[in-house]
Amino acid sequence: MPRRHYGVHFGGGHPDPHVLGRPIVVLVLETAVLAPLLSSSAVGEGASEVLPRLTAGSFFTEWSIDPLPLIITVWAAGLYLVGVASLRRRGDKWPVGRTLAFVVAGMGSFYVATSSGLATYDTTVLSVHMVQHMILSMLVPLSLALGAPVTLALRTLPAAPRRWLLAVLHSRIAKVFSFPPLTFTLYIVSPWALYFSGWYRASLESTYVHEAMHVHLVVVGALFFWPLMGIDPIPGRVGYPFRVLLTVLTLPFHAFLGVTIMGQTTLIGGDWYPRLSEGPMGAWLPDPLDDQNLAGGILWGSGDLIGLVFFGVLFTQWVRSSMKEAQREDRRLDRLERIEARERALAHQSVTSAESGDGPSGPGGG
Image (tube, rainbow, N blue to C red; front, side, top):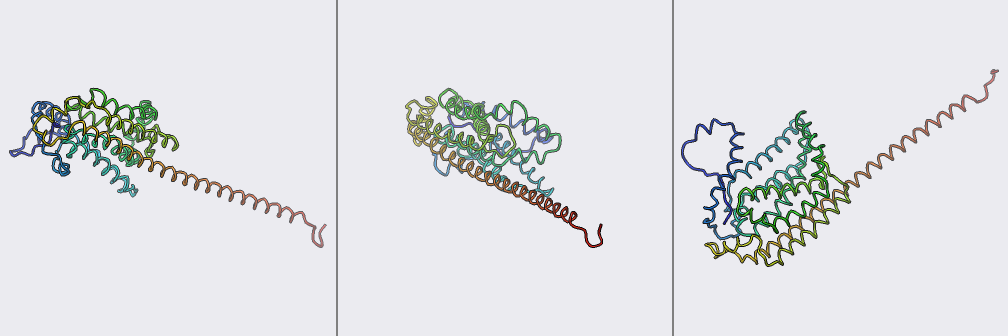
């Protein structure tokens, strides 16, 4: 059964005056809550939905305007841009690279993964789902962390919300969920739990579980990568050697999971994909086992690639931090040398003055 869409329908007719009279926040909340519920009622109908043949162009032609991803993307990117505009109005600067990282690479990738052709085929072709998985679990969290939204919020929020945010950052629960060994374990164990339990099959059958899986992938990735990036002032930040170590440790786990998926003969999702192949889409759907082999290769290759890129980012940050520390140390030593030179000059001047005062008296003296 393909993915159940709950996209916006642009139909004719006159607008409902009761809808127009509601506050926009209420409409947003109603859409976010009711959309998955309405879509879940159409599960039976989705089984008969036939998707066109998957091609490279399907990524562009099979988009859907799903309310939940759209709301999350618009609100997150909008609030970020409001913060940037607030900084600029008062004359402060904010790096353009951070804005692009958060809005374009972060929230843009999130929306692409959950609303483009990737989302349309993510319950029909396992390899397509795996591309979506890697975007949500690695690319999106890394990009959001590079955008430093916590730093931006602390610089732009009014006094009361800023105190609330600081209270959350300093809370015990924040320290627990940013504890590096815990976040590393969650990040490593989650994919195994997803693909080797009933969780993945449940995500194919239930819209709620499916959307919860997307949120889970982003949240767990953020918990792991955000402290390692170390830009925002959040708990769980550790020194660069430990950051690099944790990053390197993720590489063999991605490889091992990918190889395991490629090598097993038991199909992920049980009979879900074989049943789809027996239906009208069987003429173009790939062999389930071959597609699973491809999905494992995508997880292995893309996981290691993004991990190596992140390793390069961390190493660059480490070098820059070391250079800045060396410059600060040089300035400190220079300042100490100037103070010592000034003290020696003053001491020499005092000695010279004393010797001049103790010299022999001139004629007519004594």
